[in-house]
Amino acid sequence: MTIFRVHCGLVNKFLGRFSSLFSRRQSLYFSLYVCMLFRDMKRANLEVMAKTTSCEYENLQYFFSDSKWDHEKLNDERIALIERQRTTGSTADGVLAIDDSSCPKIYAKKTEGAGYQHCGALGREAVCNVFVSSAFVSKSKSFPINFKFYKKEEEFDEKTFHNFRSKIQLAQELVDDAVAKEIRFSAVVFDSWYAHSSDLIESLHSKDLTLIGEVKANRNILVYHPVKRKRCFMQQDELVTLVKKHYWHKIKPVRLKTQDGKTKTVMTYQFKGKLKDCHVPLKIVILFGPYGKKDQKKVHILITNNSRLSAQKIVDLYRLRWGIETCYRELKDFFMMDHYQVRNRQRIERHWALCHIAWTLAYWVKQNGYLRKILSYNPESLNDVRHAINDIIGFHQTVTAAKNPAQLAKKLKIKSARIHNKAG
Image (cartoon, rainbow, N blue to C red; front, side):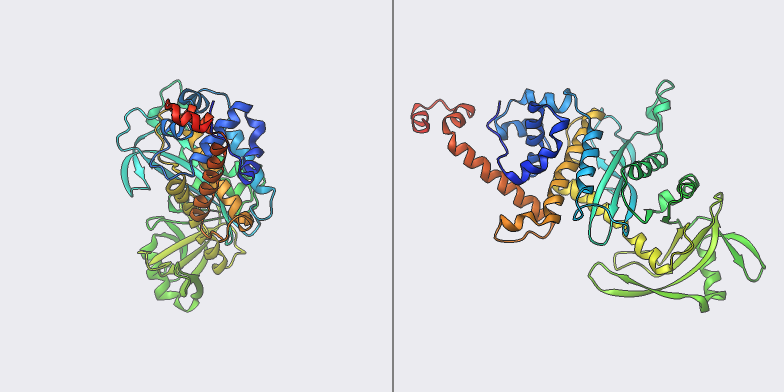
């Protein structure tokens, strides 16, 4: 079958947690695929993986494409594993972050779900696959929870249109999924694109969940006008002008930590209001100043349905949202989540799920400090941990091959009698 075996106890301990979801043969290829995601390869190519491990390509292809295993159950077990340990699990001081991400497929013509749409990875419209995702984020840890494959509305016909889910609907499903998985969090946070949806805000409010989001500059906000002596709707420019003219004496400072570790002070004004076409009473916080040097916006407007939160707490919780972008940047940069060469939705979702397993292995090792007993140095970043795990796997694979040189020579199709005699 293959000379590839994972004899590293650390890796086996982690991957063994998923053994109930696979047959014995499937478990081998599951381990193979996950371990190959730690390699520095340009793409997750099944043929290259098969050659690297000297296994039969058809067997690996069958595991990935046609064998029966459920990527959703795999992800459920992954989260259960994370939640079982204090060092890796969620905590009440964290947030549930919702966002969408994209995998550019510029030259894809027949890849399911790949269409011309906004591609966050490129910052422009492009052909890409898009998924909506959820992640737990706190000051000390963060991990991806789940993802939902997104297909544009025009890709459905009359017979299949009942399967269509908008990004907002997928976001609602991800929130319900996190609650069902008993993920602990203090608030649901999302960016201005999701905050434009009154349906999402009202849905979260009806479930007694605290929400924090940022609204776009053109969103109409209900505020009391001291000159007109009535409540009226205003957009960001009018609102900022009103505050600077009539409420500047009520502004309060909040402290922000910048990316370089320094602390800066920005001024805020908060009041109770509503968004147009939304019935949920909200607390509005206006920030006068950018988050950091890379932030080009001079004004930010945050909203929450929890009136008890201070402006400082609202800002601190909302800024944790960036953790979801860090998670998926690591999944793409380190574990080839966007470098797949399959077209079918099921296969794409399987690849994404296996990438999440590989990421979680590195996260699990890092959070528990397991490499301190193995290595003479302590890897700090997740990428350092990835390289260390790959080196350990390679070391054990080399030792295994050295113990079975005859088998290795046969698998490598070496016909030299001299080499075979030496191996024997």
